[in-house]
Length: 470
Image (cartoon, rainbow, N blue to C red; front, side):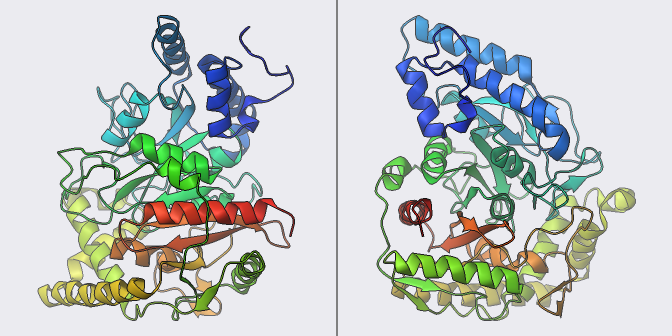
């Protein structure tokens, strides 16, 4: 620690929340170099066991910490994030650091500029210490041909989930304060659930996105991951804002930190174990029910119901196949053998679709979207499980059955997150204690588009309920 540190020598700065670490930096009890050095030490001590951050930029991070301290000494104020260490998912550009995407097909040399959301975080004082591991080419489990699998920090024989599993595992292992991720079918929420942290899929347009093959896409989003809800709200404030090249981009409506500082039960709460149609493992159902019972004892009133989303899984398979064909079709004929079997299956499914199939999927999604909007006219928030299964052995790519129902494809086990992606809803994975086996329990809270502040306030109240004695 620097001479400026007022913490006891045995105190680990990474045991602090991001909000508390910033307060300590502003008081002069810690410095950006202190927290960056602590993150580097922690990564070096723990990452061999979990493989969360395979690409590292430690000396660049130390250099940036020193520059922040020099600017402060010259009279500038600390930026919002005060030099907190950040991990960025390795399908997202950070200036001067290679981007791999977890595949030889996408690996490229260090870019000159960071992608928009990362650039905003850096301008607000986050310091990138490394790139976090991810699923290869968009799978749902964090493993790839370049860096291997990321393991669950609590149960190393099990998966951390995907595709932003490296960021979630690094947060749970206290390697970093803040984790960047992105989400198509659940990639921010599933690993957050498996690793016992928080992850938010925002409404498309709230966080500026990296350049996409299809700029008209409404499913891919960037978002924050953190250990606490106030930390997540702080990170969200630091990465939102209008970015003209992203046609969905819009100005940030309000401070999400203010929402986190005003925890409260929303007025009308719906709750569902399975959305009326999805298979869910008995252990997940049991953990979910235990968490819901605790919230009800804490004063949260809810109704057992869910929107009618019948037919949406079939729509998701069609639209995912179409999107993957559009994204990867230029590489498909000559590089077919370099795709994972799962992604290859998505592309092949896209090729098989007729114009009528595509038109039908678009029509059905529109009808379900309208039913979802009607539902959220009656209810403010829906609570459901974040995952349909518990973390499974790291060697398994995806579970072949759930609650006795055979899986048709590798995305069947993430349908409970994917349905909200395809409908454009914000969804937040909130830690809710542990089950009897010690596995993290996670609640997925969902609202209509543009309801992030409501979700964050509600999540902060859930966090309060689980931080007190039962």
